[in-house]
Length: 439
Figure 1 (spheres, rainbow, N blue to C red):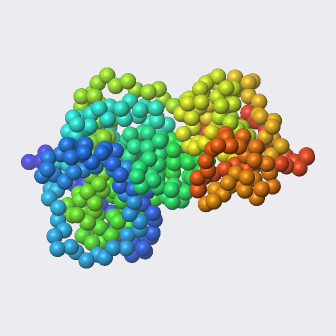
Figure 2: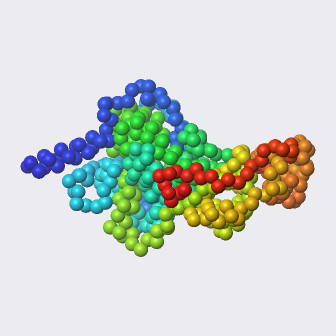
Figure 3: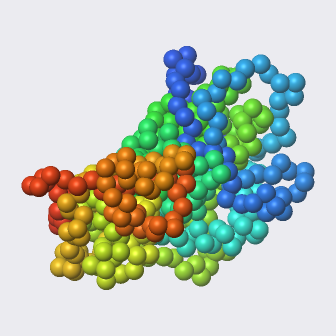
């Protein structure tokens, strides 16, 4: 009897970790308006999802996120609001200390978690194996960044269910990168997004942005399950659900259809993915060929430097260089600053500094970005800026037969006055001292 009482006490204590510490949030918090981070897309196609679960189950999706803006929906209860999801939550007690691995986010087992464990081990096993093989390239430094921001390291597996650790993941609702930020949220957390660079795809910068956003969410909810659900649906959606059903228990909120199924599934997906990723062999994932951890050095190059010149100086391919700099959207470094910090393979810095020579031809120019409008031609654009057509063609790697499209970004070289300062190469490092593998 005493053992049962003790176990019950431990279970209640762990469950309470995901309840707000002081009742419901104040009305001021409910009025906060933030854009949700993502868009509600799935890592699987609809036809694949239909095969994952029986028709009796509502088809869950591996969400890349939800694009609902700050909610303004009425809080009137629908005619039938309950869904059929029933959860018998088994909290994995802390006294199982002999079991490995350990977790720094709450881990519970229920029917939904087991459902996703089964999904990942069967129908989705091939895809999940690819995500696991890719994970080792990013997880070590992502965990370091989360830890530096005072967050649980196991939150790194949100990036697994968001994108499969793919920096180039892009959803139909325009969420991008390993953490699947939509543009407004990415910009709000310091990520630059324009026609030349998309830092949502930068694994390091996007992880730092995700850490800030998750910390803000935890400050609101004081529960990692609710914070994760808020990352998916937007915090206002979760706040309104808590107010609507008078509970701060995620599993209770997940019983109702007010939250979209992708959000109700998001937390059990996170738990299932974390369990497998931290002990893959236990779940039948053997023989995974993990990618090597990402390592690189940084150098400073002038703005508008051709990536081919940088790759040539490092004696690598352009594809290898782009793999280290997925945030770069064009063939050159961005034109909006005199210098740009670019990542090159670890151990290549001395070779780069020995071989690299900036193209002196473009040092006599500054650059403007021209967004092509309807009816414009190259000759009209050149005349408007007072330059010749040929430099525009050359710097943009175009020919006279190339077609312009509305919204296209063109670089326009503008001659500078003699003696004006121009960009120059620098060996200066601005790497993070705590991560020598990325200096």
